Length: 354
Ligand SMILES: [Zn+2]
Image (tube, rainbow, N blue to C red; front, side, top):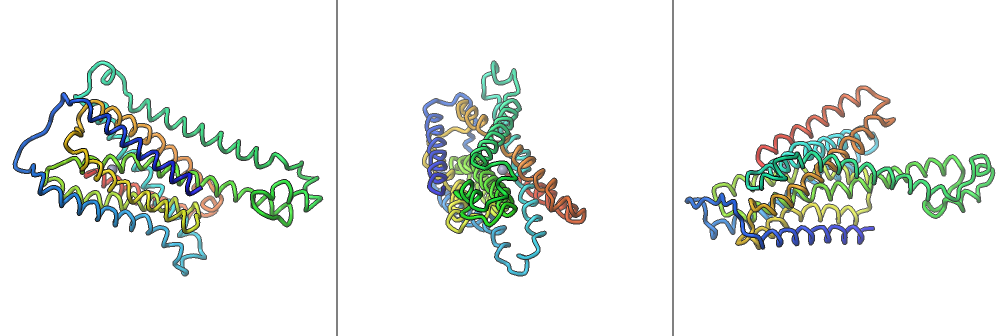
């Protein structure tokens, strides 16, 4: 599974590189380059290298922070902290969708650099985000029903199964190993499918976040404005750390083994540095305001916004707040809402800078 994910993400990164190289081939008709005293390519280069290193480190810290809460023994037994960390993370993901990715897409697709005819006549961002949310729902529901069908294909009606231990072991033993009885088996079944769901959610979220992370890195890498780079580096460090905490909270509930966790952490941490390096490599030809760059990145942003908003609301927030743990305690619910608001508020604040 780790190698499949590795492949998936590298394909994604390659796709982004291809998109951006295509962007280069078209000359920009919408120049906004100002040649003031701030533009200094040789001074900008060391700043970008500092940016690559510091963003890499802060991303890793951010994404590992929620994972560490697991290894604090005093906090492990009572799982209410676990729920609160998850809610904080969900708030961050929700704000990433609503406050970062969606407005970016609106900005890009309504840019004056784009031709009037299709782009200013129809709200493409909202349309694509809506479709993307619906497609996510479709994939979510169909994958779940296919999984459940496949999983229960061999199981006989309840009464018969309960009669024999062996039948149960044969029918669903392939996934969980062994079962000692019907009750136990059904419970494991439910937990197993919930865990699988969390794992899929964590992976898809990483993909949804990747677009935004690469794009902010790309614009830093392509810029030679030394006056804006310095504060931007600091902002991006906080940005990636916070976003990392959001993703880390989702990786936490997926309960991966160490290696898979490390792979997820690694891929999240390299996305923005990768974007900076890409922007650096293409800084001669990459124009943020070229129509093809605006359209490509704008559409990608719109679809990841739909995905992030759907996942944050349905798969993270609703499933937690409507689940048995939070429904059982109003006090824990209130604490969790505070956590959601803190996460969403912090990430919204970040939108001021990147
Ligand atoms: Zn952002």
